[in-house]
Image (cartoon, rainbow, N blue to C red; front, top):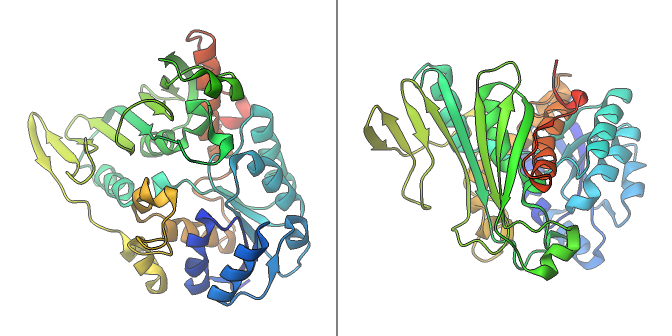
Amino acid sequence: MDKVRVGLVGLGFGAEFIPIYQEHPDAELVAICQRDGSSLAALGRDFGIDRRYGDYARMLADPDVDAVHINTPIPLHAEQSIAALEAGKHVACTVPMATSVEDCRRIVAAARANDRRYMMMETAVFTREFLHVQSLLRDGSLGRIQFLRGAHQQDMSGWPGYWEGLPPMHYATHAVGPLLALAGSAAESVVCFGSGRIAPDLVARYGSPFAVETALVRLADSTLAAEVTRSLFETARQYVESFSVYADRRSFEWEQTEGEGPVIFEGEIADRITVPDYAHLLPQEVRRFTTKGVYDDEHAHLSFTQGGGHGGSHPHLVHEFLRCILEERPATVDEVTAANWTLVGLCAHESAMTDGSRVRLPEFAVPS
């Protein structure tokens, strides 16, 4: 295989990936899929894509599609991932992997049974901030990690209805992933407390009363613990997807407000830094997509107006997915890693609902 032939499903946020696949030297974007026929036709015309599917099953039956990239609503992730894997397609899926322990288990089993690559497209571990801190750890600048802290606070008012009242930790991978990836470890168990209350009409959807959930995560085969905080409704805070790393030589702390810049601490000395872009890690053809994409001031999307373009991560995600297929190796965020990061949140919410009891992650989601 010289190129991976990709089918893209879900064209809201997912439209951002169309030109990246079209211009990546290892890919051919052969098909797009969306239920909204008018939007599907318009995007097909705009980007010159003739093969358009309104039915996901029909796209999976297309022998010219080697891999699918799923950008559909959260409730669809598990069944669509499993269907694609069982159809012999490689799968990239936006976060989270699934919304139940059993569905995570089924995806892991399907990837292995069908010998296909699965990658959870976690933006937070391909941002320029993550790549910079990763480089500081690798060259020894920070030293030995002592503690990690992550937070994802966002107001989901105005998002599609399935978000209303969603337990905060059910969408925790943006905060969890960087911590575990930088520590080079997996989560073993979690203790979580809920705090505050949301409106009764929000509680009614999922039975989750908490405005905020905060967890302490014990890492496997490690002396480290990590703290994760999530909020989705009725908590005043500027949007933030953050991670901070506290180490013995230097520490990295996320900026308090957008635009002021993160801080490197050396002892009690604090220096604000400008994080460089890491487009040089990508093929020349897609480097520009770390700073510009489909969505801009004129063509807005909530994930961009709130998420700031996800730190230049999108072409890095595409590149990793394509290379793991062509190199016949597991993806950086493969099925077991994805299950571990997703289940931190699911198990954390279970802990919060049982007054902070310790919950161990299932064995299938903890790499041996």
